[in-house]
Length: 489
Image 1 (cartoon, helix red, strand yellow):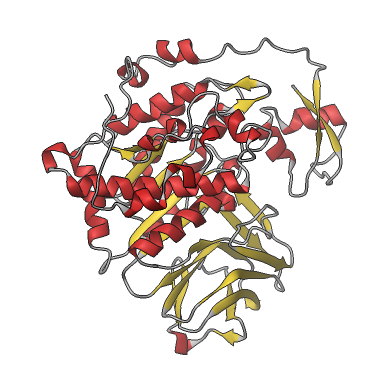
Image 2 (cartoon, one colour):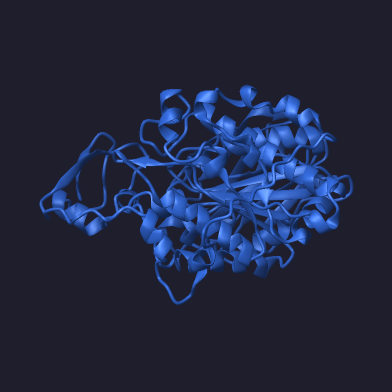
């Protein structure tokens, strides 16, 4: 059974988000799924309470995921819509992607000088370089190293608090922070703490520079910074995406707890899944455990945090429909019910099975059948904002006894969380059979792009660095843009 909402109180939602305005009908978007499903009435009540108190207590969202969240387009679109309605709490979290040798945000450019090393969450845990709040970490031993952030749109004058997250220990070098031509000092209420430092700033913000001092310690380890309005009100939305990240990636966010204590997220959206299922078109037997551990990790830091599980969009990989999207949708729905979370059914909202090729044809998705175009991610951001608003509207207008939004009724969702099974019978019905093993001398050619590493390429194609090096007779891990590698199938 599915409850479809027809609510008049916030009628402007229908006007602003009319389906024909969001995207052409050829995409088969179904806005009757534009809400967060919840099975426990208290979830809807808690979400509504956060927004009812938004004039005296910020509402803070953090959105974890892969490449689509790292670039930030859907988050930027949703943030704009929600801040216009509920108030601007600040820009949120920023990271220096240039120093990490990866692509950056649509909202700002980054640059750096000196030598930097980095660690990304999909690479796994490292005893040498722990992972921070957004899934990446930078480190430099270069006394002349710098980091710079250049906002594409200047932030207007207002009272802002800026948090700079770095390893503030006995061997850390100190830094000089500069906004445009102003050096930050005592008059900005500069305050050091175990997580880094914070200060207040009231002038317009265009460029932020971090310069490492040559004296003092031996290294500087950077996790990111956050720009927030000092007033405790309004809506703030932190992106925390890493290309190639899967559910297991979040489990190595070693610095999440101490940094989340500062940023205080009220709602966490877990938008993983694509990198968990797309390559083998199946559900890993350990995935349920990974999702459960992720939920537990979030609640360990904040027992009251509201968690939103999501489904993927329809996927088409290597000329095959990724049937595992359906199984993943049902698994996330079931886990949301058993773990007392929200569930955002983006799979059916975005059209359902076999619709990604419509998105490609209309110019809203790339030909790889996985990633969306800029226009496609804009639509996802609009649908995300609409889903949040419609969920709040539902929670506000129905009696407590009826404050439950139910999604599709599947034949048997309990089988998907049966701890005695590694892969459920239902998964076997909708999951494509694995391909037969290919000959050992079968290769795929791959042209190296700027920012690629052997470990990233190996992860993407489900092989190992050793096998790639052996196939290409490489003596080191050094690769160059334009270089063609043989990738073992």
